[in-house]
Length: 431
Image (cartoon, rainbow, N blue to C red; front, side):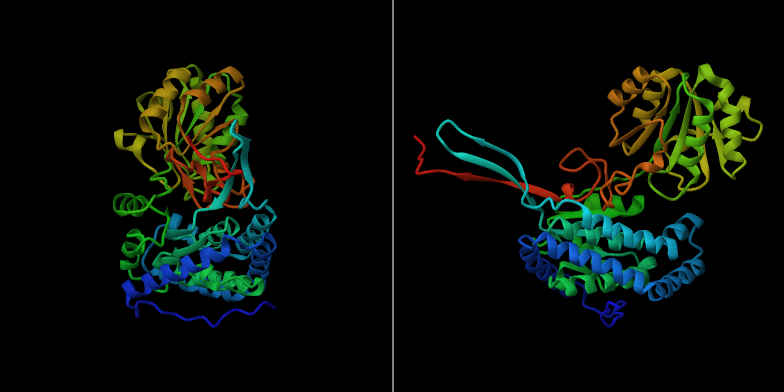
């Protein structure tokens, strides 16, 4: 059995500013080592961490139970509890995610391009780590493993700051990552977790820790992401909300539409890829009742525009705020639109540019949707719940980025790298 380090619970009994500055220095030192670590070392650390998670399932679930009990006492929402909860299957998925990341090609040191200039200079563009990543997250303890593993694979050190609600679960998983690092002979400072629930630690990270942190990735609710985007003094990879749309075209297959819409909304309502608005071509009013009834039969509340309300006795009326809301619950806003143009107009007005989908048997219409909707992820005849780095073959993701600079969509190992130019000459000087 892989041995875990003795688990310390620091709580709030730390000098936050001093602790965070020291973590920044340790991360920088580790990043220098990771930049030249071999693929074999990094993969061994990941595989041993996965082994530790499997072997210490009982320890992790016991820690998670503390968080769940505290969450229930605080009367956290059902969707929040769902994001927080771990079980045997979810732990298996976390371990498998680590193993999947280990199987990925190592991006560090790969040649992105190579060319020769007329003067004989040989120029290579080579992929490099970003350095130190700061990840601030709330309720999902699996982010500890996903973020730690992806940063390690890409040669980056990472400082993780979990929310107070997932504090015990995240630390238990972090112990397994440290066990993997030790077995592989890599510095424990490569994956650090903030040892306090004091919110001042977030503010310290947003300053960049005296230049130690190169990028911040927030993973959580709107208030957290807004704070990070407003206060961070370093670049941020983030999305503010997942207001995801599904458009059911006039040439959609009804049964396919029912299956996709129900899955998109209800498979897991609390994830950022869950659908929040359903748009249906007004030419297919006959689709409204069967699709919405399938949702309602599974406990989904329907909030409808005026035209849909006339067709459904069980729907409540949507207002302007509904089209702007990420529910993260079993609630869906529904509207009839004037074909593909009406759908695109609605999406471009209200979308958070995260994930939007079209259901149609017309390839030309689907291509128009792809061309004219400016979101990070677009899907044709598939559930929005596939908006996930693991489903994209990235092993996992550190988050979804909706910005247009550097990273967009699922942030995996390649998105956690930059590049440098290596230029070789033979005595050339510039006139």
